[in-house]
Image 1 (spheres, rainbow, N blue to C red):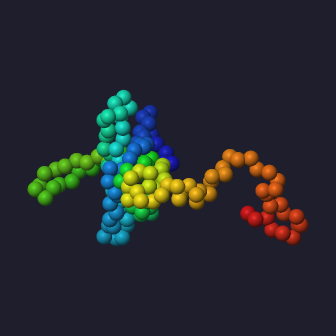
Image 2: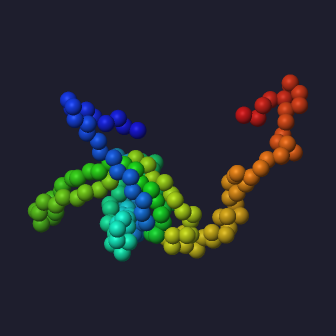
Length: 158
């Protein structure tokens, strides 16, 4: 986590945390020097009116960009943590435009593939559940379930 910058008595902080659904599949591109950059937009419901949403542009870089492009799709639920950035550019017609976006430091995939109606919508959630390595999390463990090291010659498995 980046420490906030202090100027005298002021504390300056730029941190954004959002949870929303992707409105389209992510777009992965590479800069001329080969750095991956992924852009996508998430829809975030408003707190007091669930019928209204804000559409927030997200930018990810490098390995995070490639992961987002590989594992996210339209309709998938994601949590995004990063910083707000406002930048400007000039159109081909010579007009100045400003864009506000979140530059993500961390993106968490909050649903299973196939549950958001995205690129993996034909993927069976039932199949995923059957492969879930964490399905026994929280169950009671008996001594029969544990492999004990009997002799001093055996190595501990971690």
